[in-house]
Image (tube, rainbow, N blue to C red; front, side, top):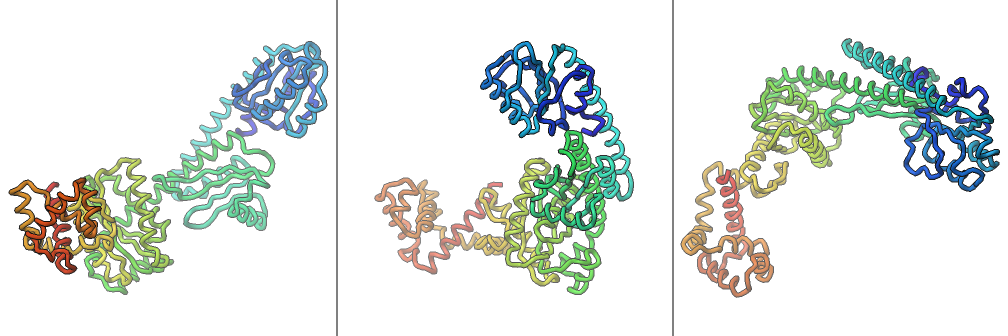
Length: 530
């Protein structure tokens, strides 16, 4: 809380009921914030306190038992109470030396009343003061929030918001964005500011300053870190609340800037579409990218397609989705452009880092995106296809076409967990091409036709047996175990396969053709189930 909104032990000592009170130990803790006043006459505290309570007691719970007193006092310190006020004379007459030493060592205020006092008057007065201060804190927070809202309506509010935070709390403020320049507002010298930033980077600042931190987040992505730093006092509850409201305002501002930027870039869809079609030269592409991002150093690129039947270009969620993609893949070292195409979005990801680990970074980004989309439940049954990695920017059409091909194969094989990456689809790439040319059915019949006919007329399971036998590399024992049949039954089926396919069906060339035909059959069968 602010200085006007908190109650400290020192302020309570000015209350009329503490006129004759005496602080006998723990004076270093008079700055402690008091959140409540509580009368306690027991020795076992356990979980009865929340922290910040000023405890009133007559000592009836332990009387002259110094061991009970010590245990009780340690529990107060561990529970982060604000202090202890004791009435001397009725049940206890003196404070043991070890209690005084413990209070001083922990800066835990120990206050005594040498005369009888009315605890009911103390609690009533201080609770009235606490409630008054609480209302003051709420009023201060509302005023501050109103000021933030006013600044958000200006053209470039970020710097003004940070300045407001600095002036309102009168402590140092540091903003460290993921991208861009670090901002620090402090009365410290330039050299001291550099030292603060260095200690922040090394995570050593907590040892010499009081610090509070809040992430600037939008769409479940951290965009920056906001810190407040104090050399003179612990960060109060009020200051933490102010920090939280400021972080929210900065997140709103950042999201607004990203939204405006994304809408601006959406107008460039026509140029991007022509790039995907291969209509631009390498020089035109590089010039365009440099106009968009002067510091961009392109090191290859690829196309990622996101497809969902729920996509509508006029839906504001599409813009938010693009912002999500941009923030995630920017963190992974990619500059992004996008174009909406009916029920899908084409993302061109220009690599700004080394090309050796591009695939790992793309996979990390996809994992983050899917997690966020699942949490927000914005789009159901979304598919992602990643095309070839292209070193020459002009050849982006190859990546675009292979990303499309990846989506086609995924749609055909909905019940199979296939990779997002075109390069990991292996034999399915050939199968898809053969399917588009209308050659698959004939190929499957040429190599598996007799087996299909036998199964159909005899209600057999030769195709299943053949597929398992090939996957087990001809191991009869393993095949029988996977099919849950006895070895004799397997021998009978293999004898029939020899009869239908020829005894050479396990020879290299013929076996490859049969395996291709089986995979092609599964591919066609999956698409017919849709």
